[in-house]
Length: 375
Image (cartoon, rainbow, N blue to C red; front, side, top):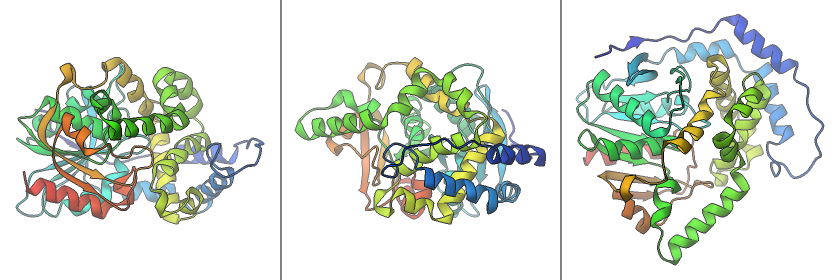
């Protein structure tokens, strides 16, 4: 069994200085003016983010603050994983593993882990190719990543059973964990249901209407998916050394996929909390060199296999759905989900978008605890 090794973030000041200089040297393009955010990232909002980064955001202090987390690295299924391991201070319930998606990172779940660790052990993992986890030598899809997370939880940390939560890609990993390891995965909790797993089971007008709506949104919003799936290397050369370009590429998705009822994109970016989140998430990818590698999961998905579970399978461990106000991936009808998952808890919330760890940590934690306690 591989023993976890304590980990501390150590980024030379010279590297931070170079990033700052790249931002200062950025040559802004001349763009036609129009309705903000309708053609992508809004220039005024991006300039506000850049100004915040240069004049109010203390990169070294922010990274130092992250070192207060109990961080570790360990080899799991052949790849080095970075994770935060919050141990319960008392008799705990089933341990939890929290898994992020793209363009998010492990940073999204730090506050949730702090709250959840009052009653159980919590692991927040950086997926392979992201953050301080290793970059894989070959393409790695979500199923292979799920197997690495499972090895971390069982072989490295020694948990006999655990509960897996995921958002975005993390929900796909959670699905594979429930499908492939039903003896050790006590249940899976998801804030997003991937159309990849349920579209083939659509039946009836309501479900067909949901699928048509998803396809219509994807036609408008899915260029990022097609690029990152089909030509990720071309994008890698664009994002790897342009802090402003990377910030623009990802901020647009954070804003488009977060709860629209909580304010417009421009209103959210005016909030210091969102500014810090967006800048720190971008900085994390720059200092770890993962701006490019974090997108490779899209290509990995394409080569990993056909949509859905093998042989039309069904996840038979207990499943909980926390349906947030996700404008990009609204929950399918429950009837459809229940054909593919053994749904034992279904809760619809009035707020919280695609990034529950940032947008609705209180709702997420309460829902996770209620689900885990019943297993």
